[in-house]
Length: 135
Length: 386
Image 1 (cartoon, rainbow over the protein chains, first blue to last red):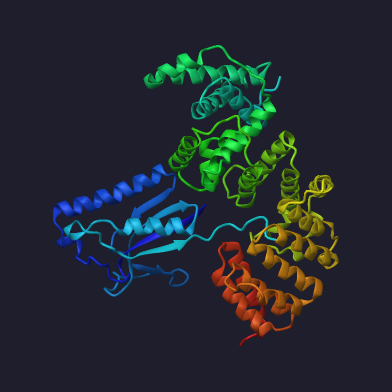
Image 2 (cartoon, rainbow over the protein chains, first blue to last red):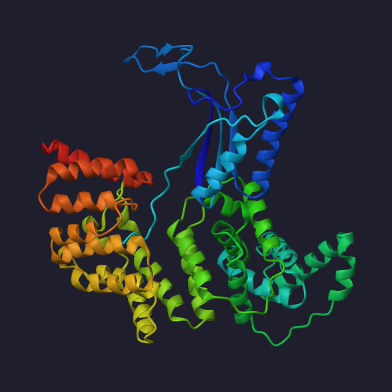
């Protein structure tokens, strides 16, 4: 009964084992990859562990307050070196071990040659509400 | 006469009606769906036309819904004829049925989150939507979790008693990890434990009920208006619910008198000693340490050993607390937070500030992290910089 964020990076994570960019895959390999991701999410819905999954567009910008009466300052697009989030999945599971196992499964999504990408996923526990009984 | 719907009554009757349907031969999963449908119908029908016999009404409607579902399902036709339309009440009582439902919903083959969800729905009479909102997951996810749980226990014999300890663990989880939503999960856990206590005669059930009541009594004083955590020592004891404390203490005394002490009774005894102190400074820490020794003998929980170190620090001074802490694995959750507190009480503000900041980084709850950060900031503001 703990929520975890599985974070997928465009950039910023260590290089995956099967490190071929998606635009070099065959259309069939892309289809197989998308199918794998959909099946994974669907399976988690069936096990009652799925909370949310979203993909993000790669373009974005930084925004900050610039003082009273002035419009916010924007900066962007992101520099090529910046860590870039591609998307996430939120799961609600019974243990940390289960979260790690599911992340491992998601990381096995097929890429070039139909072989697993072995991409690095960031796994982050949510901060929760405090338990009532502590002493 | 009473146009408003008595939702509490409905929820209380849910497990009773489910027990009757299962005893008549309906399988648990189908019966549970049928009861939910009957509850929904009652919500619509009762305000305008309140039944003279609410239980009878729900059983009739639930049984009809069960038969409808069975008939609609071609694959179940044979089972329908096996079940028949004639109810066979059998020798079991409603109390036994309720008790068996608790055991079934907390069956060891279920994961904790599944057992919690199934208990809240089948025994608590909550809707899937209410449970989903309470645990902050989509309704579809919760629906799947519940239907999987029902499939998991579908082969379990309903007439066998289970282990009450598994039920207590589930109720403890509902109480202790209550999230938000429109359902008060702590109050719901108390209601379900009270109902269990009425149906069973086990001192640990009483122990858990006492523990819940004693902690629930402090609820109003546990958070400041801004939502921040107020530690026990700083709580406004005038806001503690004295009626809940009196009830909890009485239930605990009745349980302890039976001389079969268990984990929940011992935890409740600690809570009762806190409740007993008119001011934090008057807390009987020596007795609390004794109860932690009892607890340590009953469970190998690291949380107990950590809390014992805190109590030793209060009973015998911070040095003694630090010595007790030194004997424990320093990777235990909250170990650093306890060390920070004991170092501050020992007069070492520099070490305390460093450890509070470190503990804040390790905290697993938002409120705890903010609390620990404030402690570090408070000491830093007083010049406690290393």
